[in-house]
Image (cartoon, helix red, strand yellow):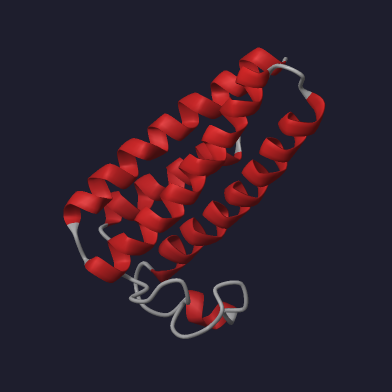
Length: 132
């Protein structure tokens, strides 16, 4: 569910064209991204959407770490454990791609970022399917 929310925010950021509303990464206007004062979020157009996307992405990353660790400890099937590791690799790659999209200002990175998001969604849905 968190991944769907994340993809929704990503779509919002893209459709509004506000992917560069926050010009730095991994910080946000020089602040640690988790400690940005709320009034900064409400500043210029698009900051709320872009910063929310980053925070939801961080939450999805944390959930993916927990998922991969849980699968490693609790599931005896090696291939399922590897799916968890694959999800972890993809979510880290997504974070790096999202950051590079900001620092390198490259449209192609944005396209790759969007495509990898869909792959990640498919993978976590597959994990949910085989573990339920």
